[in-house]
Amino acid sequence: MIGVVATLKVQDGKGAEFEAIFKDLTAQVKANEPGCLVYQLTKSRTDPTVYKVLELYADADALKHHGGTDYFKAAGAKMGPCMGGRPEIEYLDAVE
Image 1 (cartoon, rainbow, N blue to C red):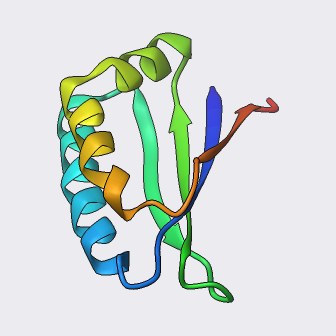
Image 2 (tube, one colour):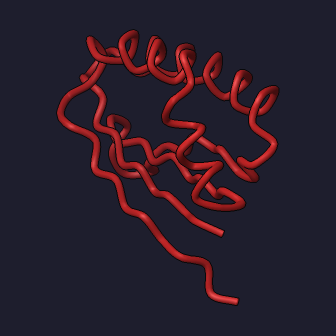
């Protein structure tokens, strides 16, 4: 399994718009990606402009498929105006 933690900084006042876009993306992921085991948006308790996406994929192919989907690319374009900086992405390997 492969884990991903994506840290996303959102502009002040854009949180609701960002969350709505992400909610639609999450629905698409859950409906179309059986290899994506967890896809959860979380929000910092101390900084309301910081979000983290917690992701868990069955394997490298599932992760690659996720990034190549049209709905993922479209959501990224929609989120762009909400963002307050570049995402920070950390990749993790499951310990079994």
